[in-house]
Length: 432
Picture 1 (spheres, rainbow, N blue to C red):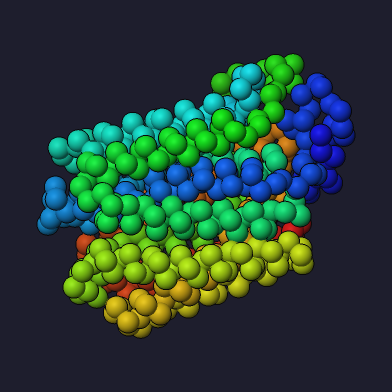
Picture 2: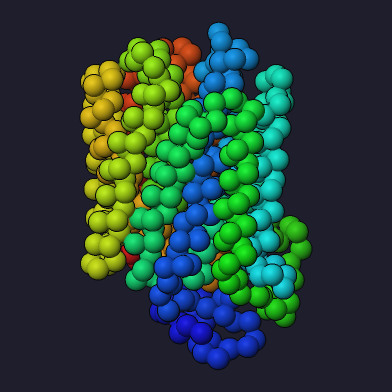
């Protein structure tokens, strides 16, 4: 069993669990580096998760919105994506809190991972037969609710199993899995499976397969009932709040994550429509694939190189600030010239920036968690900063594009949000 690493600022210290048989292993700070097999299975599960999120967002939902209401497609898409993000917003911290207190003999996290995948696939199946906007909204709400549960428990795998000194490299791989899920998802539903219904169903199958592979072939420490405090529902819900006054670094890290993801969302969620309506690219779907491939290649390079470098140096904040600057420059290019040529230049910059961010962000975020006993709950609160931009970005984009019809204005807001995220990083004191 691993030794306990020094707790982060604000964390409750835990005793050593060497030879432990009382269940403290489930709460211990990991000290033994994880191996390639475990990393590969987590990578596969994350690819399935992000494929289930971004293949619909990038391709299927915009196409379905256009099919159902061509005149108001941007507004309809904004409403549907906002409803789904609200579902993820609620389920993520609640599922995290419940998994922190789960005493199943199959472990704390794995039952929730598989259950979330099944619910997410059910929502995608509903989308595959949606005849109107209302059913489309219900389907994406269910899909995002399930995928939010899955995200909460997969994110908790990092502080549960990975030592702090290894989290930069693993964070880079998580960022790569998000990108690969996006690129592979776009390729899946534009090249391999071309129908809306079959595209949604294929995504659902891959989400479930990724969750099952990880749950069946990786360990998940069991938490004995005696270590679970008894709380009322009201107390449990109250504990979802993490006071930024009491834990200021947690608050600034949350703000960083929210603004960076908001900037990324404003810059990428409407690329298909941008290529069609502003850049006037002759084949928007193919254009999207080209941009995502360039973006993905740059993200992989940045994630691998910067993840390893941040682990060696232990300096996380400088990478997060640099990432924000690079992403803002990518947005600026599209403000100055909203064209296909500018998009080709912006795509690798955005990939380098987001890959660099993911090389630092998981280490930063997991080092500011208040208590080891609430890891998944607190990471669920952090993941609100991932889901909330999917509510806010479509609302902002819908207003800007429906009223001003201006993609440069949208990209300008993307750059402003990203710079704000970089400034928030500088306020975090307990992380180098």
